[in-house]
Structure formats: structure tokens, C-alpha cells
Length: 59
Image (cartoon, rainbow, N blue to C red; front, side, top):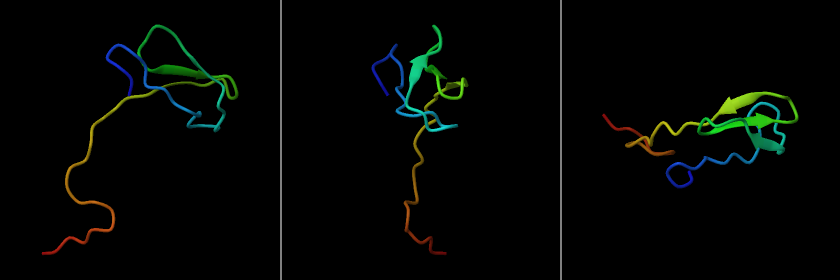
């Protein structure tokens, strides 16, 4: 993520894989794909704490 007030910058469209992305307006983290004409938003939800990949849970 970028600095506060900045944008999270995607490298490709999550729908078609195109790399020609442009900011889609004044809203934070909204992007327009020029390949498939979709507009999408990015949002950081958080980080999962706990079990990691490959770790086996013991009971």
C-alpha cells in the first residue's frame, strides 16, 4: 500500500489480466481497466494471525 491518502497500485486487472490500468476517479483505490472496461476497487482487509502454510494443527 502507498502512503496515507495515496492509492494501492495494482499491476494487472483481476478479471482479464490486462496491465493498462488507470485511476477511475477521485475515490481512493478505484481503478479502470482499459482492456475489459471494468472498474474495480482495492481494499486491505488485514492480516491473518496464526497458522501458517504447511503448519499442522495438533489437538
